[in-house]
Image (cartoon, rainbow, N blue to C red):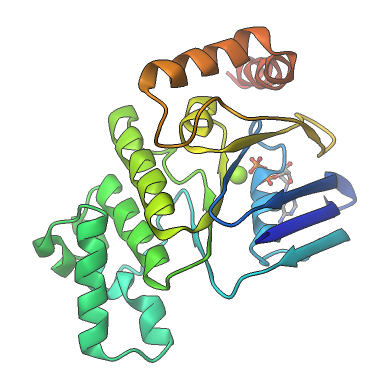
Length: 251
Ligand SMILES: Nc1ncnc2c1ncn2[C@@H]1O[C@H](COP(=O)(O)OP(=O)(O)O)[C@@H](O)[C@H]1O
Ligand SMILES: [Mg+2]
């Protein structure tokens, strides 16, 4: 077990955002957290990553290193892609040669061209920046990676490529991941298990496991599972109907 939440709860300004949240994350497992916007996904991830101290419950971590990838790549604009990727290594005191070697290897792993390593974030596309952010996460050789809607801002085709990249590297490197998304299709494609956060009240409304394993599901299975859950499974109907109602209200 890498991570365990036991009855974790949190509030902001007296308003309950998470309540009685319990789950575990096993080594090499990918758990997706889905739920509509505002339901507490980022708060849950922040608590998991130790960025937010929960008001209630307990969090147990059994690993030495974790990394996080957010929706915005959060790169340092004054550093090249190479120096962004190697940032964590630099903090740990790695020499220039090691940093260059690791950055080159990881750039290949995330399909960044060698010449892109010398570019600054502003010279890279959104997808390239997110590849750099992912490579930077991998550079410290994490046992757990936390993802907070990392591909939401990207177009559908690119999103799919990067999802495959996450699945392949999780399998190849054996890290566990907690992956927050409001895209059910994404959750079904990449995760072993999907936890659904309720629209209100901050509780886990339920859990589902897509058939097969991440990386072994073909597109048809992914689509059919997503459609079936959306249309026939009350767990998702409730959550996503609520989201659509809110979107209509906002429009
Ligand atoms: N630092 C904060 N202070 C006050 N309220 C917050 C803070 N962070 C999040 N919230 C509120 O908590 C709720 C859950 O937010 P969040 O975890 O970001 O949801 P999600 O990631 O699912 O969209 C929202 O209503 C949000 O406005
Ligand atoms: Mg969020």
